[in-house]
Image 1 (cartoon, rainbow, N blue to C red):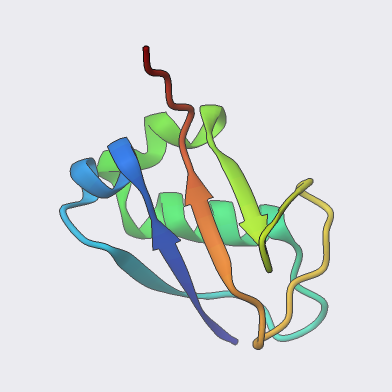
Image 2: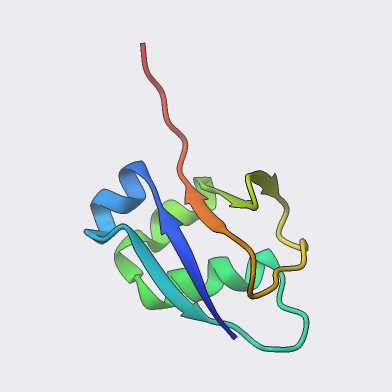
Length: 82
């Protein structure tokens, strides 16, 4: 199954793109599968992924959350400001 993952902030800057399409197994993919696929396809951002959160359909999710091909997926790194 092909999924589009939106990239934000430092992840977007490191990847030099706004989104990435990843392929995950058709049979019951979960959020952790998406993170692994992003790390495989974009090795430059792999070190950032452990500190990132995955949001699916506007809510943060854990690694075992099911994903389907209609999900809106975003990879969001930690941010700070002042």
